[in-house]
Image (cartoon, rainbow, N blue to C red; front, side, top):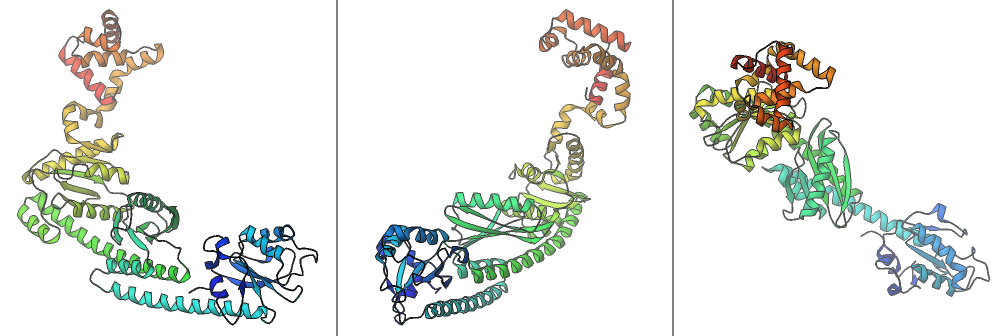
Length: 511
């Protein structure tokens, strides 16, 4: 047990007597840890004191006429503001007994005051506290060694990481939580230790630390608890975050134990990452087997490794692989495989990540692109026999996603736009710009809207009434604009061929 004022007062050899009734003092005042004992008769010793100390005085700093509480209160309030744990008054040195005014001032300020008999030297009080401090330090160091040994043995069990964190929680009497590389909670010990609000606060802080991509730590206060978080892994390759909290703050011995667990957990996650990379190569090979048409072989291997393949019909999604953070992305996908058994298969494919998933994981691609800031293309639903075609569809959808602001583009969206929409992604764009140049130049010079009017008219199949209503103008005004466009372009837009050619130019330039 650490040295406290209560233990100091309970030592019969020192014969110290508490002068301020415990009931009149703040709660737990006598149970505050005593950091050290100092003696000084300076009128203001606070520059030489620190929190949690006990000060011993003989009273030479007080005027002989000082008797009332008001005479002593400024001195006592300075000590209380400095964070002293208690004040001891040595009797029969300067004064007979302890002044009643000092007792009253200490009661008013809430500072414990005790009397030190003349026969007890101040050094005896200091030595007793020093002995208790050394005893506590030895006990905590001994505990730390035993705790580290227990944790090291736990690390040798089959599920070493889980056993290590569970043992850490037991040794510290704190809850311990592990968050994965995306900031999602992976495991908690004890399992029901975190409430919803605490979990949300810790997860948000874990996500913030991970986004820095640097080794770091942090503390937050929530629900009256001070929570500590520490990243796992190396800068640029963070594997997760270890968080812990409890009723009290950890002392140095507890922090040493946590430091050793951080090293063990980091090593375990690095080993898991190395294994995941090897499994990733197997996944890539299995994907090529699937595309080649040998579905049965791929299914047999997948069942032994991860579980059943997604049920038909399936969709294929292609995702740009991040320049860095590939391991974090793989860990995120591995967790989703565990959450949705039989609904997802993924693999690395020529610098990209390919996903094969069923309807049981509807938001999977959106969550992935939003969480990692990536682009993705998604195919139509197909059977395994058409997996190669689905892969081509996903490739085209990914190309379209790279060109726009959307994170996810499905092939269904592209197919609804028609074949002409692909002109915008070919060399036809420059030809289209030249075709439309007379209209664009006229709009810029005159502030007109010939391009917009023409496009709206074509979208309404050349019907003037409905197109004019959409533009908010009279149909005769629209007729005049179309006639002006025909004049500038040198084309008769009454023919299907001319309209189709002009519509293709508008699509190619996105005008």
